Image 1 (tube, rainbow, N blue to C red):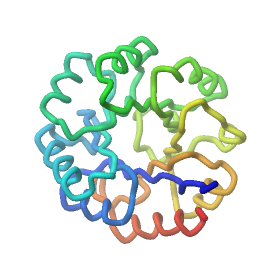
Image 2: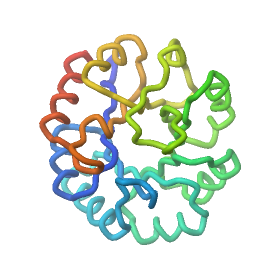
Image 3: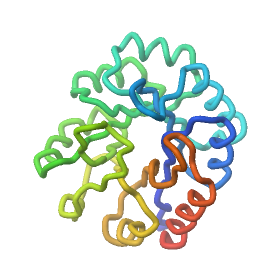
Length: 220
């Protein structure tokens, strides 16, 4: 049986140029932030341009739109205007009924749900979502922001994790940590953002390549 490589997502991309450069490095997914208060926020027209280019030149790379607590009608408007989004990542306080409604109304799109982990109980709250999402994303809890803080989840919460859905690890992913992640934590995918940035939304391509290469060298 062939074991698939750990999936890699680079999140918080803000330009077409960097999206294509990073896709060329062999990542599996690229995320655009559609949360207005984020320093990595991208306007809808720019997001559309980025996703159109990725769809044209790297169609196998998943195009992830990161949203937070968005009314259902706004999701419909966004998907109608941007047909190249193929993953919605919920990064807010969305409940099970919200996720169920999206899965019923937008069956053509993958649905990922982010959970911010502060205590053990936060992990126990994930299981009821399993029938209404396609993937789980674990991020660290931070009172200042819902994501992109660069803070790791405490290691004690990452031991022996199992979910019914594929799961991604986010929060403070660094080249020093990837050996532990790949060999011990073993997530389905790794979501990287702030650790490879020059400024919020602008990635250091050399550092990005170095981190991707480190993951792939361990992921045999």
